[in-house]
Image 1 (cartoon, helix red, strand yellow):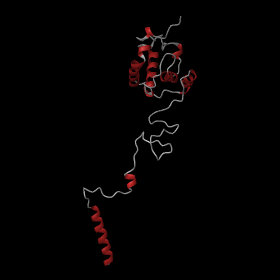
Image 2 (tube, rainbow, N blue to C red; image 1 turned 45 degrees about the horizontal axis):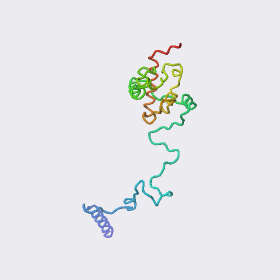
Image 3 (cartoon, helix red, strand yellow; image 1 turned 60 degrees about the vertical axis):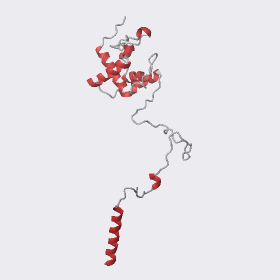
Length: 188
């Protein structure tokens, strides 16, 4: 019995001593290799990696967080394929149309004009872009319009670096709204 109470007393004394903390001492570190790991500068040579570089290239096929890759090229064939395969994920709500209108007025208005007639303020200096009310654009699929905004066509540049994908879809919604509101072109 004495032996047992002595063991308990030693255990309690050890626990009490372990609870005492000296603020000047950092204490003991469990697994110091992990706590004090060697760090390398991103562009510095690294003796640990196979290619000797610290900053590694992403694995092929890696998709950045928050992005959705488009597996199309800037060709007319892929524009048609995008028209068949891509569907606008957004619905035409007043809020979406207002946001689409804002992006349209920022990027598209200068060439395509207020109502999408191809009569923007820059047009006297450049060839007239097609009207959104022409038969070709009235029958163009949403995915094809998205592809055109993304990759450009003829004299129209790509807006992929300036307009995020969700905003491009909002522009497609607004273009469709302009087509519904506008007067179709009269054929001669």
